[in-house]
Image (cartoon, rainbow, N blue to C red; front, side, top):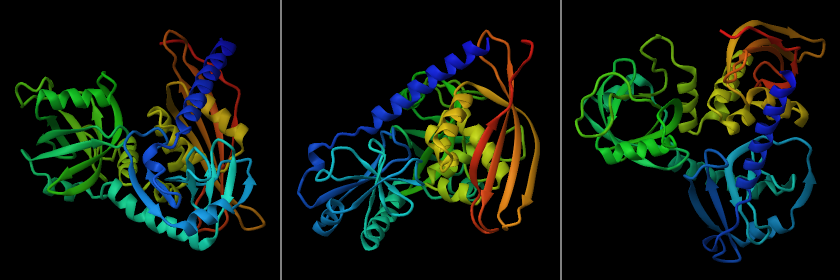
Length: 385
């Protein structure tokens, strides 16, 4: 049973890796090769996102700097942004812009070390382009005033770029909305690959020329109100600090997707506690959001990352969080240890219990927590219920 489980997890892992690598081999199109002194900046919420924002930058100084840039080979993935740079004059695949301002080639595992003035310009242009790509982060208390009941607005899926019209019908703790027409319902179902789902998705909501960060699920439920739209019930749209029908606390998965829709995941994770980072990692795994998983785990050794992906590639649920211990060593660095018990349920098989230990560290009290390593304890099997 144990061998079968890990063989299945390994197959899933290999498939995910090959899919990610294939999708990262973006060939430069004709519109990207307009001039020898032109590069194209692209904003995507994830490497596979079909929705993107582009900016052509004509600057021979940048091209010259990139051609003469020093190359470094690095073992671990750097701290990446959602900024991609197409440089046809240098190579035929996209670079990713690091948080440091350098460029990284995923295919080659190479970093281009570029002058600070060049990286500062790229990061400045990216801030402007990102503000156009993502939605504004607003609290639910503000959102419900901007979007009163019976108001109409549009929803765009941040991954596919598909957009449809909805009407807010009700909702006290979040917005209960419905597609306006059967054509809108068709587009929404297409976003969910033809099957309704409770899976949360990052969306940008547009009304009166303004764009807001939000999250939606894709499952019709509850009361109906718009005849002829082929949608039986409503679905939920969440904003910052909105809550579900069943709990007064914000839903963690919805809140992650709201942050993603605002382009705010990096700063959100940089300010998060180790416990919140582990909880976010589990939610990202349930959502099958590999880019989010990667952001939370950046910096750990490749073999540890592969182990973690193997453990999280199957459906799972958190059983218990046993403890969160924090201690300070003699050098003054802060450390935190979290032991997490999880239950993995595969269809037709007994539930498997296992435990993961996460070690976090930060250099100073005001610096972000970073995952250092993860250890796996011996799995146990429980009877199928």
